[in-house]
Structures are given as structure tokens and as C-alpha cells.
Image (cartoon, rainbow, N blue to C red):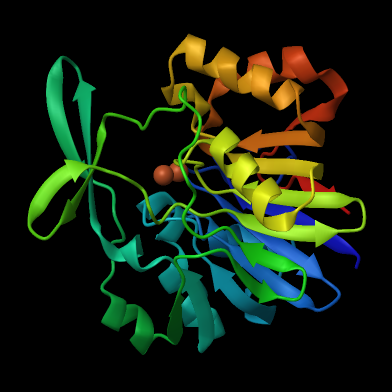
Length: 279
Ligand SMILES: [Fe+2]
Ligand SMILES: [Fe+2]
């Protein structure tokens, strides 16, 4: 199956085209049809799709990695173009999300969940299909579902909270799921933010797929928000795995991206707006 993955929304622009934003979205072309994994924050998905010549009206399904605004904010814009379409996500995708951040010495609370009600998105054409478990969404295409936390070094971001049953708690991110393409060259794994921990996610994929060979991993890895020790543990784990290309984006951050480039050399690429992975 020939496939092409194009980064539609991302923090950085490096291909002379498109606009950057804090967000992530990948346009996936296969010989069975086109799919969208995440939708960015809403500002760049439509203009970038036009610039990169990716027809949002052609998508067969939308997959959401988790309920943060920077992955779901463009959903309404896509639905206004596409109309009726299945939107696959974990049921916790609509939880209220809060980030507690320090800015200029003050504590700031920001709402970072989906900005739209489910009923509004449904009125635009969304048909939500919820999954909690590992799911084959099309032949050879999978969503990880909930990812078991196994490593002892991948800690949750302590600044992120969610509200459940009226109580605000540290966000468990049960909704964090990644997308898998089972290709002849090996697995291609796309993270949204990898809030479950990228190594936890890879272990889960190996376990569920019964395969260890990855052609590529790409997407947001949230490595920039971890301690330097945690980053080194993640790199040591990656070095022990059979991974062809490592193409990070979004919440990976520069410090972690530079370290990955230093460690993996030509196998590393930065997935900026317009980056393409052909399989
Ligand atoms: Fe993100
Ligand atoms: Fe996130």
C-alpha cells in the first residue's frame, strides 16, 4: 500500500510554504483514501491544506489524538468544508482541560480543552466514534486506544489538569492515543502529543501488533517538558528499538529535537509544516 504523510499543522515552517501555529495535524494519503490525524488549533489547517494541495473534502475519516485545543481546534473548520464524516476519539476527548502555567512570575490558568460543544460539532457533520481499546479503524490502520503506563521514567506533565465529575485532578490522559499504519516497510507510528509517554506508546504498539520493526515514528513527543534525565532515558530506550526514521514535531521542543538529531543523525528529521514521509 503506497502512503504519503504530510504535516499540515505544526509549530514551525521550514519548506517555504504554509504557516506555523502551536498545534499538530497530519494528512495521510493511502491507496484506500485520505485521512486526517488531528486538526491543529484552527488557524492554519485550511490555508495550509490549500497551499500544500491537500483536499480536506477528500478525507474519509478524522482521528483525534486527545482533547487539547491545539489538536482539535481545527475540527470545526474541517467540518465546514467536509460535512458528514466519522471522527474517531476516546470518550474523554471532551473533558475540560486546564494548564497551570507560570508567566512573568504569576500563576496563570488557561483553558486548553476543546473549544466547541459536541452538539455544535455534530451539527457541522461530525459523527463521533468513541474507542478506549486498540482498534483497527480501516484495514492496516489502527488507533492505540488507552496506553498502559509501564516505564518508570515517563512522568505526566504536572502543569496539566482535567475536570471529571466536578473535581480538578492531574490529567491522566486516558484519551491520549496514537495512529498506526501497518506498512510493508514496517510500522509507521504518529503521535499527537504522546502524553502517555512515547516509550510506553511504542511498547503498547509492539505488544498489540506483534511486530517490532518501525519504518518511522513521527509527531509530537512532549519531550521538552520533561527533565533532562527523563529525556536521556527515552533516548536510551529508542536506541534499543528497531526504528528507521525519527521525525518529531510540535511539543517535542528544540532542546529535545537537537539531542535526538545529535543521537540519530541522518535517521532524524524535523517534521515541520509541509514535511512529507513517503512509504
Ligand atoms: Fe499538543
Ligand atoms: Fe497535548
